[in-house]
Length: 383
Ligand SMILES: Nc1ncnc2c1ncn2[C@@H]1O[C@H](COP(=O)(O)OP(=O)(O)OP(=O)(O)O)[C@@H](O)[C@H]1O
Ligand SMILES: [Mg+2]
Image 1 (cartoon, rainbow, N blue to C red):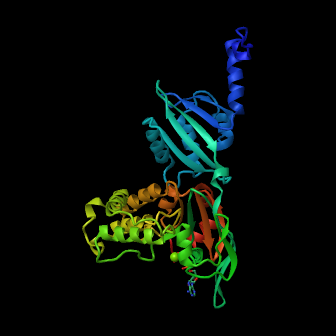
Image 2 (cartoon, protein in one colour; image 1 turned 180 degrees about the vertical axis):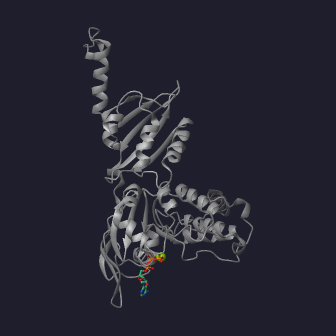
Image 3 (tube, helix red, strand yellow; image 1 turned 135 degrees about the horizontal axis):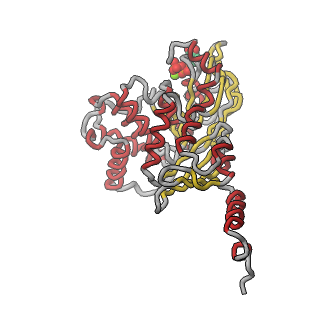
């Protein structure tokens, strides 16, 4: 005999059963929304509104998907640009009803994973999970300071980079961004402060050891050989990786395996058709793609990118931005970038430096509306 639960009690009215269901949904740790084929809200729980902090008035049947997108666009979640256009882009994307998964960092610093599932009758359901705890800090600095003969280029910087995020370091010229990168990769020694990577103090660790621990830096230091072909450049980088591998007793990888890896990396960065060209003959934007490939060859857990789109035309910027998004999957990326469109588009979290100190931190929406940040940018030559 199965004892009858409330759901099996046919004396409960349909409305009461819905209430029971609603109460159960609201107790879930995950947020849920269901939009119909017209993109109207037909189902949700309160947890969704808590996790994403949308206004309570949107929590009603028939709220349109575009109302949510508009609210986000207006609070700067999608970066700069015309609100109508930003909303339109999101709605067009949603209308494709493709399964998707992504992560958003909330202004609170919480990381929310979003999974979208198309429904057989049209529309889609989305599940929101707070994964902040899994996204612990992979890299932390405390009181990081660098002094050059009495000039303090970096002062008392506490940087906290969450695992699996794209974190941007921005600020006017001379703010100390590259110096921070040099300190993190131990190209420079810190005057004061500590650096911790995955819980390990690396403040005094040698640069080559840092790379072996999984922090690899690209750009501003050219990692490519001009007269080797694109393919050979990637191959050399892979050999470097295997030479660096601490499991040196393993038999050398067969040539075929290496060739496969080279091909895969070339495909990953869209350079298959450039493979036999000497690196020096690559167009500028493609050269950056090659630099990304040689960095990827080391399979870093954390990539440091210093101005990846510097000096590029519009088309190259777009291509490198999508490449960064792709290589960031399963990795942590810390990047210095002056192109605020790219920053808005890619970063989960932003730290703004000014004269060596942290001026502001947050999501793009937050920092871009911060008066101190606006001042810092207006007062500099950079746009
Ligand atoms: N080796 C050095 N010796 C003396 N001063 C230095 C040295 N390296 C950097 N500086 C100074 O430290 C400050 C910060 O420089 P840094 O290159 O870190 O700035 P940045 O934020 O990367 O600027 P940009 O946006 O122009 O790349 C600058 O005033 C710079 O002149
Ligand atoms: Mg710099």
